[in-house]
Length: 163
Image 1 (cartoon, rainbow, N blue to C red):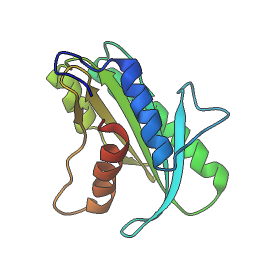
Image 2: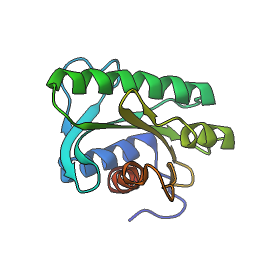
Image 3: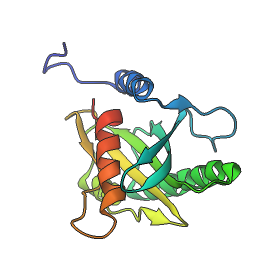
Image 4: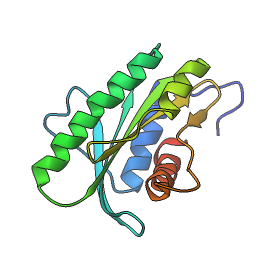
C-alpha cells in the first residue's frame, strides 16, 4: 500500500507498467525500435476497429518541452509504420508514447493531448503521466468521428498506464 506522502518515482511507475503489459498480453519487441526501449506490442481484434497492432513505450525525459512531445511522438510513429509494414497485413496500427513527468507544465499536457493522432494510416497517442499527482493525461474521446480509435485509446491507457 502506498501512503500519500510517498510519491511514485519513475522506476516504480515503469515496473507497474511492465506488470500491466504482461497481464494484458503485450510482448517486448526485439530488434530495431528506433532508440525506444523498451517497446511492447500486442495484436488484438477490436469490435469497432477490426484487427489492430498496438505498440507502447515509456519515455523518461525529466524535463521535456512541448516540441519534444511532438518530435518523440513523430519518431515513434516511424517505429510503428516500420513494424506494421514488415507484416504486410491489414491492421489498424496504434501507438502509445507515455512521458513520465513530475508536475508537468500545462503547455506540455496540451501538446500531448492536442497532438494530431491520425497520420499516414497510423494512430499515435502521446500520453503524460504526472508522477507527482499520479495522474494520467490522455486524449479525450470525441462525440462523433473517430470515436472507436479514441475509445480504444482510453481503454488501453487505463489498462496499461493508469497505475
